[in-house]
Amino acid sequence: MSTEHSHVAAGTGNERALLIALALTSCFLIAEVIGGFITGSLALISDAAHMFTDSAALAIALVAIKVGKRLANKKRTFGYYRFEILAAAVNAILLFAVAIYIIFEAYQRFKNPPEIQSMGMLAIAIAGLCINLISMRILSGGKDNSINMKGAYLEVWSDMLGSIGVIVGALVIGWTGWSWVDSVIAVAIGLWVLPRTWKLLSDSLNILLEGVPEGTDLTAIEQATLALPGVKSIHDLHVWAISSGKVSLTMHVISEENANVLLKAIQLMLIEKFEIHHTTIQLEQQACTQASEVHSFG
Image 1 (spheres, rainbow, N blue to C red):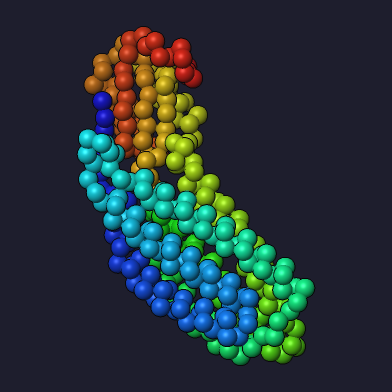
Image 2 (image 1 turned 180 degrees about the horizontal axis):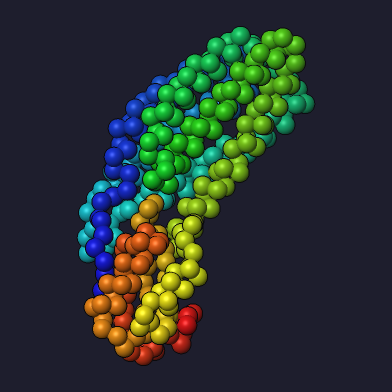
């Protein structure tokens, strides 16, 4: 028995924002790569590398939304909602790879610091910062409702910090001539991004492994269900997320009460207390044979 629930793909309203941000980022990426090699700045190349991952992340996020809109069928009964989680995981892996490369390259440059053209580095970094701020503003509306959009927003946010770091580095190099500052800024950008990238990757893996969604208290759900009149015990309680904001729950409930009345009470409680709308609840008068094979409550 199931509650009524929405089958609309998460994040479908974010396509236009992603498309605009992708166009802005991709256009500036070319200029920043060229500028990084001309000025000899690793920090600028680091920022350009993040711009590349920004573009890849935005493109993947856009594809994820389009694929996620495809209807469920007999082969994909949940549709393609989970594609956005795969996209978020890929984005996190890209960020890890870029951060490791930048740290390695910075180590090489510490041993032999190159000459840095600080004014060119400064001009390009300022332009990059403007692009980042515009993209962040465009993407901010959907970041709290979709892990896919959150990943794309995080990419642009981290690159914004990178642009600020490059600007500071360019000013310091221009005033002091300390070219090693460029490598320090590049490493700082990589280290700043890594913890946030790990959080994005762990959230994605938790969903892919059908773990309990963050912020969902399984014990509280158990206690709230057992507190309802007529509920003797429960077992086979599972809570997972198909995609961002699409939490599902299944459980078996032992009761001899009126099935329809109790079912409605459980469904209403799950919606009001835990905002879980997609539920499948099996009512039984005695525990089924599966109960001895899995974790049971009560």
